[in-house]
Structure formats: structure tokens, C-alpha cells
Image (cartoon, rainbow, N blue to C red):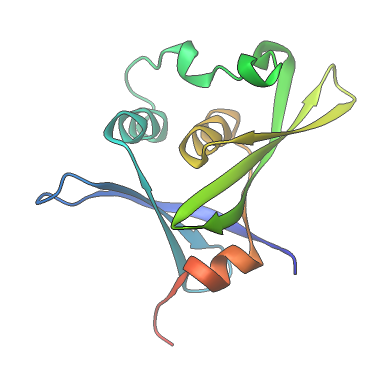
Length: 137
């Protein structure tokens, strides 16, 4: 199975439960991928999408993975796994212009990096088959 390019459709909030969902949409079809994220992560994604407010650079820290994001370029975000109702993601990076890296990352943090870098977002086809929602089928 391959990967499918996604776009950010919206950021939603359930007013009764205060749960936040980042809604990704398959670029070439009517299939959606809702990823529930915490309020803090939702606020960061919202600020990045709207281009307003200050986002703390510590929110983008990947130093625990041994990565200095100052010297990395985000090439792509991949939502690569869904297990036990939890999404997993990875960032595809280049460091020092030629060293390719893959870093496991929380989906909300990965998407935030992708937004900031204007990098494409992908989802593994198996993730879409398992957790995607088809509309109009």
C-alpha cells in the first residue's frame, strides 16, 4: 500500500466535550481523517493556520530524538499508523541539505511542523482504510 496526499480541511471543536479534531481531507477524493488532539496542540495548529499570534519554539522541539530543527528542513509529514485508537506520525527531514532523516512524532506536532514549513501532508493508505471517513459514497 502507498501513501495519499492530504490537505487540512478544518480544525473543529465539540462544544459539549471541548474535544478538538484536526480534519484532514484526501486531496483527490472525498475521504476525511479526523485526528483528535489536545486543546494546547489545537491552539498551536490554529495559530499556524491563521498566521496570527506567537508560537513558542519549544513546541517544535525534537531534541529528545536528537534532532536540531534549526538545521533541518521538513520535507513531508506522514500519518503512518493507527492502532488502539491512536494515530502515529513521522516527519521526513533533511539535515545539512543532504542527510535524510525520519523522526517519529505526535501527529499534532508533525502537522504543526508541516504547516510551518509548508510541507505536504500524507496518510498511509492503511490508516485511511482503518480510520478514514468517506463522504458521498
